[in-house]
Each structure stands twice: as structure tokens, then as C-alpha cells.
View 1: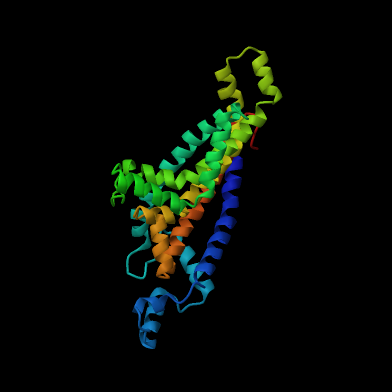
View 2: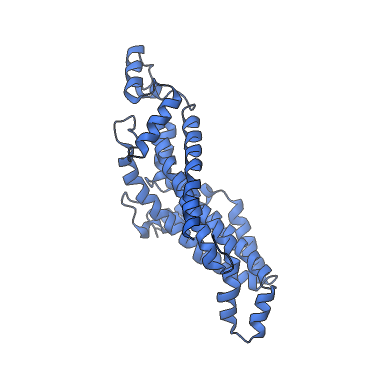
Length: 307
């Protein structure tokens, strides 16, 4: 196991460098960030040249990338064009988005897996058909429509929640935004769990466990569910980074100043340092989440061994 982890960590290095290089190149072709610093009027050549020297934009792109990566390994993600260090923006944005992501993942695990197990064990029955239709509707409706409807009904019409989340964003205020963020993924987890349960239910090891006289709940939890969760864990693991980076719509609807909000503002203002810095951390989140998912395989299925 230890050698496998070391090997995977070494494999992350070229993936991380390649991903950050691609992101750096893509962000730097968005446009001229200096043009947006002067407002509606065009910067005079002297001011533009001074700003380019100040932010290192007068150097070749490859040199800018090497300088950026060298600073990243020291914990410096650059400075936004407003003079604020990107690490300060991360310090306020990531805790909020992490809490929002935890709420969304909790909905996926609890609601999605429970519904998937129930429908998988009752395949073809009315409850199965009803849940399949419901998940299909959730997948078909765009996230911004779901978010606006819940905000209008629960916040404006019925007054059950605060339509806009406060700046501190405690967990209780993130329940509805977390449900909106997790809605589509929750539907996929439900359908994926249902399919996996229904297929493994006919496996030899399940029939053997039943023939031995094991209680039904033990057959389901210890034998059927553990093997059926392998594809579900894979989806949820990769979904963690997607939820953190893809929360732009949800955070805009509920006025949450998290990672999605900062990325939106950075792209809108062509603030390359902010965008590259935040996406670099999201790349690390994706890599670590994939490593944890691979290690969980051995926990769920004892037959899996890592050399």
C-alpha cells in the first residue's frame, strides 16, 4: 500500500504541471487584463507599460509560468490586480465553498444512496418507477431554474429560509443551496446505486450468503452494498472537485461569496492571477480526491490489493 501511494504521488507531479500549464495558457489568451484596469477609457501607453512591468506581464508567457510555479511552491499565488494577495481571497472563499460542498456531498451520500438501495431492491415496482421519473426530471431541469424556484418558494413566498446567505455562511443557511448544488449529482448517484444494486443482487456471493441463512440486513449491508458502492464512490470522489469549481451558478443565486463567486469575478474582470490561483488549488483537490477514491476501493472490496 505504501509503495502504491508513493507511486501515485509521483504520478501527480506531471499531471499537476500539465494541468496548470494548460490553465495558465488558456487564461492568458482571455484578453488584455491591463485594459480593464483603466475603466472605460483606454490606458495611456506609459501607464500600461508600468502596469505590465509591475505584474510581470511584460515577460514571455513561459517565463511568467515558471515564475508563477516557483512562487506556488512557496505558498505565494500572486497578487490580484486590486493589490490584494490571492491567498487572502482563498482564505475567505474556500472555507465557505468547502462547507457548501460538504452539505452537497452529504445529500448525495445519504439521500442518493438510500434511494438507490430502495429502488434497486424493488426494481420494477411503483416506488422504483416513481424515483426514476423524479430523478429524470431533476437531471432535465437546469440548476439555475431549480435554485431560483426554491429561493422564490422557500425564501420569498413562504419565508422558511433567508433568500440570501449571510457573509459567514453557517451550515444551517447552506442546506438549501447545498441541495440545489447536489440536485443533479444526487439524481445520478441514485440511478447509479440502483443499477449497481440490481446487478449485484443476482451475483453468486449474494445467493451464497442468503443460502447460509444470514439475516437480510447483513446480506445487504455487508455483502451487496459494499461491492455495489465502488462505482458510486468513484463518481462522488470526482464530483467533489466538480462541486467546488462548478458552484458558480448556485453561489450567484444565493449570494454566496465562495470559490465560484471569486472565479466569476476573476473571469469577468480578466484577473488572471485570481483565476489561475483558484484553479490551481482545484486541480490539487481533484488529484487528492482521486487518490482517496482509489484507496477506498480496497476498503470496500477486500479482493483489491495494491502492490
